[in-house]
Length: 265
Image (cartoon, rainbow, N blue to C red; front, side, top):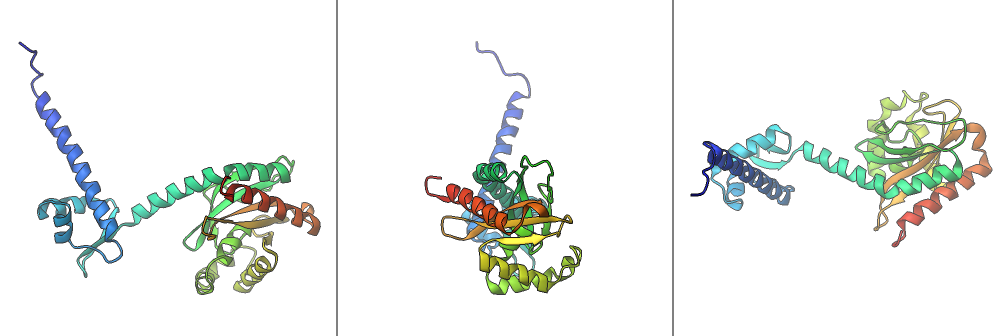
């Protein structure tokens, strides 16, 4: 006679199975909201598409909403994706970018002997997602990984701002107007001058924004379609960034970015 399961084991197994089933159903609801996110989707439509009772769908959607994964508009009575999913996606994107351009960052820091940074846009800010220090004894650590700054303040940040459509640039500069004053009393006019330099020379150049006597130089990182998705910058003390060396550093950054962006890179 086969051994019997301990008392309560069947209940625990069934409870576990129900838990797994609930997870699958919740994921199914999320996927359905994703597919209808642009216009939104009603409770009845969600329940129908996911083959759930309306009461079950409402209960699960309530839990997802409490976690910020979806958003319910009480006016339209439609569901959309929540802000937490945006944060998850942004974090995953940052890791992907960091992994892809880590070698380029290391080689730039090695060749210039100065500190190299990788930045991406996050709303009206630039976000530092990686940093590699060079061998030069005087380290110019203008940013920490995870640090944010208003778009337009800093070399990499200027690249990210200047690469946007003109209407978007104007809106961001206006939105960040008061914040600029915290950085060496910078103004909107100062930001436009930085953008013009970038457009003329193909690289950005800023000085003393975060650390006095520090100079930053940045270039754009593109995706396969040619869109700017990130920026790489190098920071050094002012004495190491005369006109001749700026051109050298700008070319080094360009070469290492292109080596990664090539189809076989």
